[in-house]
Length: 298
Image (cartoon, rainbow, N blue to C red; front, side, top):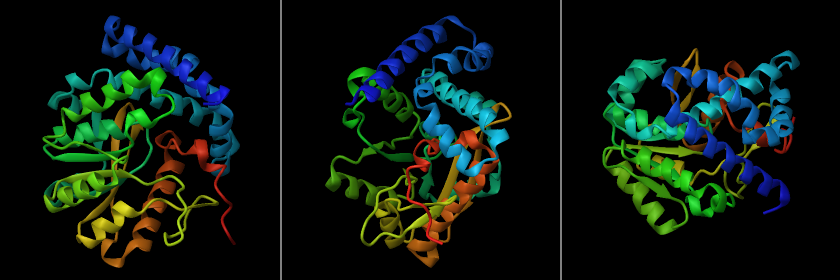
């Protein structure tokens, strides 16, 4: 790890230690105040403020960047407060905390199962909890926590996120990407069982054969292996954004055109993100790496 990564990991550890103590001492109604005060001031992502706001300035008018950045920090702190309470999530939490923009589309997803492509929103683990509490069997593709360079500093919390959220998956599980053979077999099992398989593809992983997508004025070549398996299984494919909105966590869903092949699926996936991120900039962590992506060809 370079010095910047070490500084970030250490600050993240201090942040989590403090929030963990405060969660034990403070009532839940005080959490929004906590997010807007200590959550902003001590947030480890303050160390990456320049990169994140640089990404925001690519897509947002300058007058919106400051408020979007504050909302983004609040969203991250909310995730921290939520995951420390994952064990206590129940049907009452689901009813009070979650807003579903299109209940009909959610019902279709629950009925058919399939691949649910989401994004780095801070709340992707919480999304899986919500789907499980809504009655769905859920599995999620994820990197093994031990593979992160920050693991020596915040590893116990990373493992807690997975263990405590997986309690709500209704026999589903996290499928880690470090064992490719197990990964492919587990994906096929999920798709055959018509459960919901959650996957994030909103990062740049160029390949010779993969499609080149676009987000704002940048090129992005997302990983597509899971999508290709879903297409072979003729599984329904949906996109989901899950992020704070008016005090609740809003679920936005879109059915992607799986019948038209890989390129339209990925184009629809990135187009949905662009619309949602313009409307609610705190919904996407990818502002952090947007400015580093290659410029879109004209």
